[in-house]
Image 1: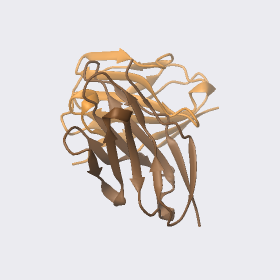
Image 2: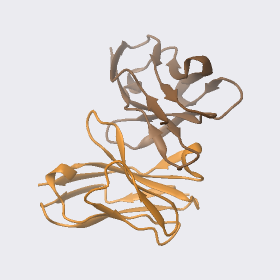
Image 3: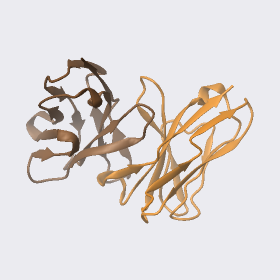
Image 4: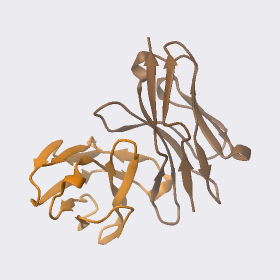
Amino acid sequence: NAGVTQTPKFQVLKTGQSMTLQCAQDMNHEYMSWYRQDPGMGLRLIHYSVGAGITDQGEVPNGYNVSRSTTEDFPLRLLSAAPSQTSVYFCASTRIGGVTEAFFGQGTRLTVV
Amino acid sequence: AQSVTQPDIHITVSEGASLELRCNYSYGATPYLFWYVQSPGQGLQLLLKYFSGDTLVQGIKGFEAEFKRSQSSFNLRKPSVHWSDAAEYFCRGGSSNTGKLIFGQGTTLQVKP
């Protein structure tokens, strides 16, 4: 099993550009979520989904958009990149939400210039 | 509100010394608790988990953790630290109501030769 596949691993964007970070899991997990990791701030929840067609905002949703059209995929869209969105992004999936083991992608290191 | 707290942001230990990383939780019901390790530039890897039963749980890489309900703690321990243990460590809980993963702020471990 591939687990959670996150692409790309590295990306440089110019301010104002848009892009999509891809996240796919092959474990038939219902719950998927996106986090950003910044030095000294731990992991902050951006958006999450409890199943296909259902998404909700986390702590830091501004500037990001998500959709969940299938169980497997949960892409994160940056609508108009800003330098404040320079960060490392992680996607995670769990079988039934917060009470089961979470599996993480390898991360995307995004730099906005 | 449910929360997970790691009081120590940074810890330095000598190679071969014992290690204890602290984690405190604030929960109403039975907590589901996890410890993850993140090596530089990598994703998060599960070290161990606690759902119920034995309060001392064994994990990978020689780590163990003890759940103490009276102290609302789930501290991670290792008898003898190796240089390769230098990494960031995250304690994690989860909400059975919202499905959210609840992370501590992380503890960075530095190992002195």
